[in-house]
Length: 95
Image (cartoon, rainbow, N blue to C red; front, side):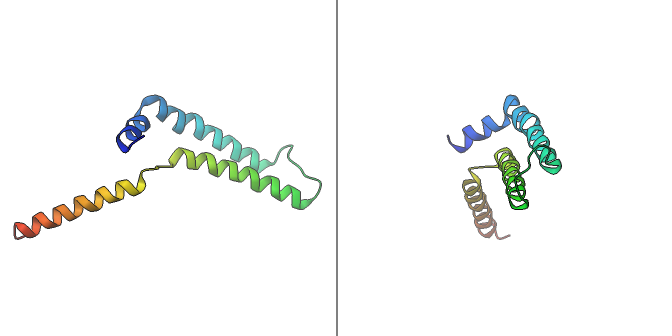
């Protein structure tokens, strides 16, 4: 998948709904359950903490999947190239 295909996929109505509505709702529900820790008890305090940390990691992973952009470096390179082109044009035109 290239940058153009990713942007088209990310902007499609189904993807927007899935990531921003369905998956975000799942992450919020999971975070609420983690805050209440309903039914997730270990045999000691350490195990309780590890269960909560694991669930918080799941929430963070889901939110990362929603916001991740695998083409961040490519976008920055294109932006840098565009900026250097503008600077070169300004110098050429005496601005």
